[in-house]
Image (cartoon, rainbow, N blue to C red; front, side, top):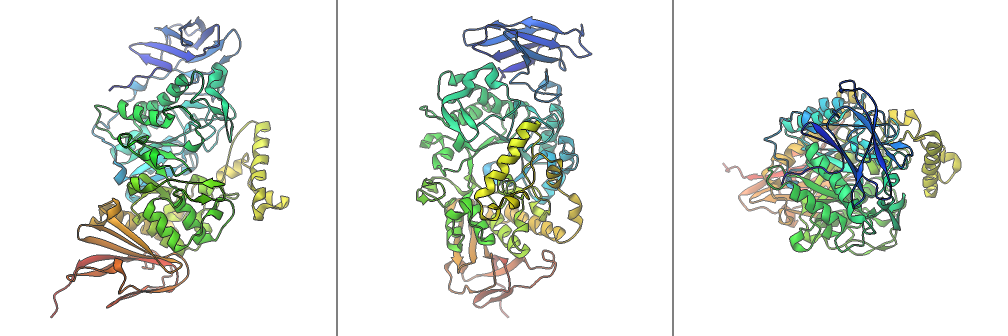
Amino acid sequence: MKWQPFFGAIWRQNAATFRVWAPQARRVELVLEPSGESVTGLRRELAMEKDAQGFFSAQVETASPGDLYRYRLDEGDAWPDPASRFQPHGVHGPSQLVNPSNFSWSDDSWQGLSRERLVLYELHIGTFTPEGTFAAAQQKLPLLRDLGATAVELMPVADFPGSRNWGYDGASLFAPAHCYGTPGDLRRFVNSAHEIGLAVHLDVVYNHLGPDGSYLAAFSPFFLSQRHHSPWGAALNFDGAHSELVRRFFIENALHWIHEYHFDGLRLDATHAIIDDSPRHFLAELAQAVERSMEGERRQVLVIAEDDRNLGRIATPRNAGGWGLNGLWADDFHHEVHRRLTGESDGYFSDYSGTAADIATTVRQGWFYCGQHAAYFGRNRGTDPAVLPPPAFVICLQNHDQVGNRALGERLNQLTSLESYRAASVLLLLAPETPLLFMGQEWASSSPFQYFTDHEPELGRKVTEGRRREFSRFASFSDPAARERIPDPQSISTFARSQLNWEELHSEPHAAMLHLYKQLLRLRLEESACGDSSRNGFAIEPLGEHCLLLKRRSGRNELLAAIQLRESGNHDLGGHPLSRLPHELRWAPILTTEDAGYAAHPQPVELSFRPLRISFTRPGAVILRSTPKQPEG
């Protein structure tokens, strides 16, 4: 199936069709401001025709790519296109006519990546490099390939108000943020990634509109629900009057990123906040629309949801009664490990023990909450995850939320010892679930990732006050004076602090940490024992309070990792079921996190093999491989 766009300004066969949904308007005019290369160079206002569904359209043969335009409703103000492909002067300025076919793709042989091969690397374009552009990020792609990441996941790039933002205040949902570069720059980024074997996923937001610069509701009030509310105000209308066209708009947005920009996957933000009581949930319709749009094409495209409900049906295939998405962010892993390493118990961490037993249960199941009561949420949470294979769960030690939604934006390596951080990294990268890294994690970056915005002054003041008020329920910020230490989202210094410092790669302990991550990812992607990502391909058990024993196996190939997350530990594994091997095989060490290349001041792990004993003097991990015994004599 060859997908064709419908909303917005569409350039095709030397003419442009402009189309906007404004069902309650009596009259809409296209205000066209031709570029310098146009025939007339004069501003024109053209009446648009209305159809029975409330769409206004006009076909203009004299329009050219690069022309600027707005829509004027009922002789009032002229506004940008809600489906604009580019806003060169910002979300409040005129839209620009874009011809996607002008770009010459060279990725015809690229087929995408299966879920089983994903190692996601989440990054924010504005803070990933000092320049904060698509072009600058493109230059770093070879470093991500050499690290062992297989897919880049961009935080939202839809244009937003101001010059800096996380992206979740998106306003012009079809337009790449002009402060990052042009649509052509984004296409070059994706094309370059494909050329070196990297997939590219995009974070999209379909649960709310940004507080400034979104003109959807100005054109049609039906975009907002009359019945449902979200944490950001009125919910989007996915199940009320005229919701079929609202659903169509957001599905087209997803397809536009996949087809006009060749993205290999979408991460759907906070889908638990998409409220839809209709017989067929919007997520199910979206997943099927993506799949149908790729019929006849070789490229694989994945759709992954962030959803705190732990609902297995979201990623269950349609033929088994599910919604047909390809995966889910599974935050329970992060929360359990974070509780173990830091001891924090505020907020949702209060629902987790962080014990080795509960961490093992979480890895074994995919998530911890499978229907039991969660006190922080105030309800029973989750469903049985056994219907899903391990790669359907995206797990992490850090992501933009878990770092940036902290009051001070500290990273995990700033909250725990590097020894524990290395050990937890082994667990993350050898677990059978899909791992996600947050930019800079691989070298234990010292840069925080803080919450930043660039709203107009009055809205910005409210954001700053709300941010500090939000943390008043945490013990460490109950004092108003303590809350004043929380960085001001509106300050340029908050944004600047959040930019990665790439010079750190050349100093310790960052270089050693990067070396460890490269080796762990090489093992994950190349070791035969890690080739089976099914539930039969691994086992995990606790060893006391702070240690885990993880086995990966495929056929007769096995890896065994002992992971001491905290403190010291002595473990006799001679009789442990996971350490047993056929008589002709033995365990041989291939990596410890205390090897000289990974630790600046190593404290070697003591190993003995008859029977197998492992002794940690501090947190760390040992990885063993099954290997044939050497002939005696």
